[in-house]
Image 1 (cartoon, rainbow, N blue to C red):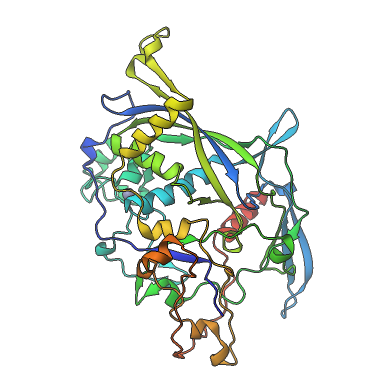
Image 2 (cartoon, rainbow, N blue to C red; image 1 turned 45 degrees about the horizontal axis):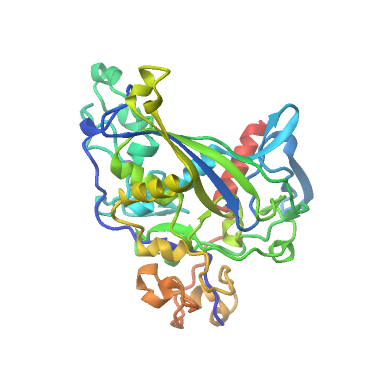
Amino acid sequence: MSFANPYNFVKIDNGVERSNIHNTVFHNKIQENTYTGVLKCTLKTLTKIFTPSTLPEDIEEKNIGKDKNGRPRIHYMFKSFYYLKKDKQKQYAIPGSSLKGVIRSVAEAISNSCMHVFDGKYKNISYKNSDALHKDSCIFIGEHGNLAEGVCICCSMFGMANAKDTKKAPESENKLLPNAFKGKMSFSDALLQSTPSFETIFSLKELSSPKPYHKTFYADRQTIKGRKFYYHHSDHDVKDLKGEETHRNRSVIPLKKDALFEFTISYENLTEEEYGLLLTTLELESGLAHKIGMGKPLGLGSCEIVVTEIREFSKNRYLSISNASACKLFSNDALKERKETIKGLWENGIPNDLKCILRLNNGFTVIRYPKKDTRDQSNDEFTIYKNLHPPCSSFSDDEKTGEGIVAFHTPQIKPEKSHRKKPSHAVGSLADVFKEAIKNKK
Ligand SMILES: [Zn+2]
């Protein structure tokens, strides 16, 4: 029997490169030798996808009985895809903030940037906060209120906030110094262009049963294994995604595959390297794809982004309204050539670990979490497959390039001490959406 766990890790290499903050270009003007403009992009969905509306009227609480202490159990139903209201009509969309988050985490993995949302803890496990891991966020303001050691390429491009460190700054200087860096890009919402076609609402299979995460899968001793990404699946039938309604899972109404969205990214003062990284990340090499929204471990959210138009502005743009040379438009053949040139500005390519996970054709026939058996250790996949999760870097070249080989090695059957912690009900990003929704409801 072989199956792939839904996710794997991109190894964190040593050393986050940071450039001195004084060399970082600021926002007040178009700088020489940098790039400013607008990218127009399409996003095509390759599987079902769901980003929920979190408006109170779009979330239904369904009472599904009581727990053993007599408290009611509630099943939450997300009854609508995210939308904007336009002339009283629903314009379905993917929020720009979600897009930006997805693109950022891929760009961080490509460029070995800091893990800006990681705080050294995962599911009650504390990982050593060693600088050698370079997972710590960049710090804008140092101990004495001076600008700190600089920022990584992703913090420079996407922005950062380090409010906690401002306390350390002397009062007088604190007032003068920024404690956050705005970033150089803004992502519009991606608006659905094709005719909306949704599945009938259903409850997603439980992700947390029994326990989708496992210390040995995430950590090597106290060191986190890397940056986590989910494998792509083929588009599943609803019957394969559907589970019973419980207080842990949610009901969703996904958009069917082959939906087409459009969005824009406005960027200013990107350095050559940053511009190259942006294009390399957005429009991945052929055969690789992004993942967005809820239900990633179950295979939802695979999508492909294509840049369909580039407008680059020169500094003349703000000097004269009639200056035609101030804006260069690239489309058709010129676009293709321009994209290749820009991608070439990022010289390091995409790490093999990441390619291995983002590959559409990964050859896996079954992707699922291991099954827990607390009574019989010899039947407990969490115990049996202690080594289910070799880092991608340990795959052979054939496995990485996906020549039809399932990239899982024969497990070593070495029953270990059982990990009998109470099951937790946290479900990653789903939980975040949910928390957000509850907050909005209040
Ligand atoms: Zn950073």
